[in-house]
Length: 161
Image 1: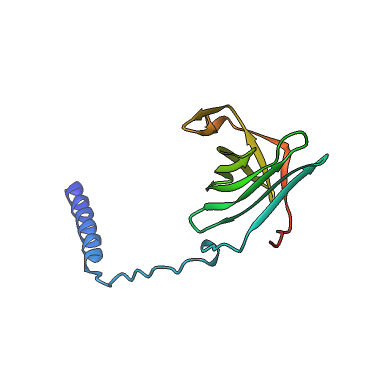
Image 2: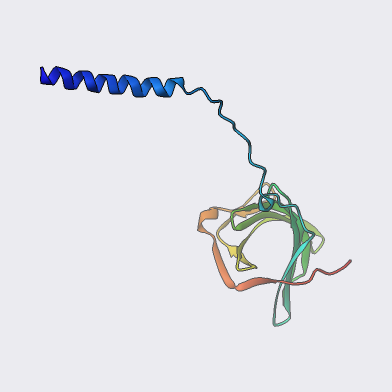
């Protein structure tokens, strides 16, 4: 008898608690929260970076749009090598810029994939094994890129052209 009474009380408690939940019919208001200011990032003009050492200069300037697409210019003027300059088109993937560098050197147009790691307000150029296919030099395996801090481009004022 005691067990039957306990079972009935438990069943009544479960039934009552379920019924209370079902009778609550207040509409649920879902209001989308407005986007945060920090999430809407529009380009603020060119970002410019340079590396200079013993007469050699690497200069890079670019814009990044809200889709993390990069568009800009890159030039290498290394002592003992021909100067080359051209366009930079690619994407920011996390903290890494991966782009195609289309440039002219000795009157020949070439395309080479470049990588730069963004770290502490600088960009460090990446290196790795490459393959040459379809008139384009690209990295074999981007996960094996090495970033050498000796080639660190620091933020500079952009030149007015």
